[in-house]
Length: 320
Image 1: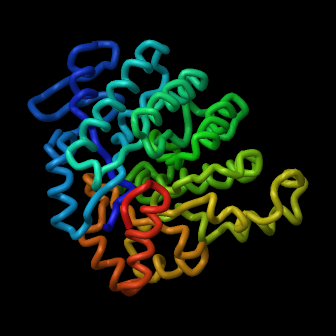
Image 2: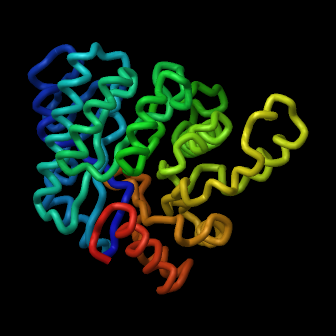
């Protein structure tokens, strides 16, 4: 069974909450909902499990691990609003997965800007069937490796679920303001920053059971981690950091979204095929058009089976 582990959803329960509660600042124009600085044209693949499965089948994928559309990662909400939104998203994702529980799983949505509440909701979601948790890479200018978030990392390690840091509201950069470069470059930069900070801050050392899914093939990490390793040997600022970032492959898992066959082959060679999983980013337009064909053309059938089936089954509890 081929499984897409990077697949987003905007469940009806979250949409209903945005319609009913002005605290979230949403506006509606037919099927288009605008809030949190973005607009989304709602289609069945966003909120309907059966439509999601139909879309996947059309591109030769059998199932998916659903995570909330990144725009739903509100920060700056009060505790009650954050609690209500997270529970609505989690209930909605669970309901979508019930369209076929053998083919769909879901990741928890938690308000990481309220760390204690995030732990409570994470435990609640795992009890309800969540197999992972999606979090933003930054929260109102703060980074998720900072001390305030240590209870969350401890809980995720204890619960043995995959953590998926997804870029959203990237650090402003004047060179990325045109040509959609905030996505094309900025998302990869955010993932790289997150991965290397988690290593340097010792989060992965303190919690060896943690597994982190890195979006968009790990950003620039697979191609530039050697620079961090070298800097560790010559810069006093890194004296307390781990010696070699490559030793964290296995705790770091990489999705397959490279949009380039040679880059995908390099990724598997550098981090190990056992640490790469199929991702699409559906239903976003940045998703590859024919992900399985692209995998097979780049890697061959055997490696595609490992990436698209074996690894997802191991990490998220699907049948192989």
